[in-house]
Image 1: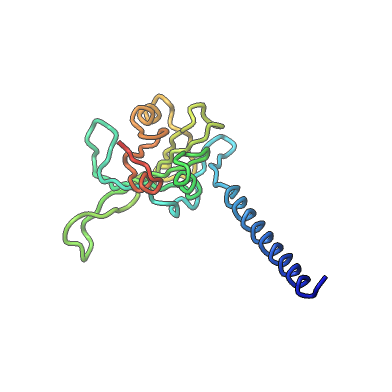
Image 2: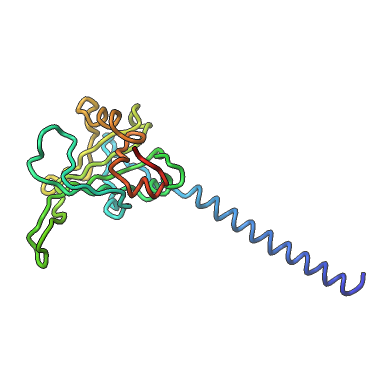
Length: 198
């Protein structure tokens, strides 16, 4: 075999090895990303949901001012933040679906207007309630359950689900824009997933 042809063959083999290795790394990286462990809800031996210690670092998906689901006028105005566990958020943005284990945290805060240099408007103050919505059909037949962790001096780190007859579940079934979630109140989340909410 002439020397030039031998060099071409060696160059071809090296190119194929580099391309094959590159493809293998790409496929491995994709598989690792797809199979990345999702943060799942944790429960104690009594079945109480544990408040995830990192929930304040979750992804912000919505805010509201004075939003209440009750007929009565609230005793005080609230500033609400809704946060979503990041791997659940990534899944929803990719697929438009809330996966098993999805957790959303609602932080209900008071409002303040007395801090310099503020002259007008209001801002969020202390948390007086933390509630979680959790999709976990291994725990509840309905798929979703709702938990109250309190706030302020009555804050706790674990909670049992609201009884189904207290109305949370029914309200979500009747009024949620998507899979028991009030997506109509979360335009940040809907926009990130490319969804239109009526």
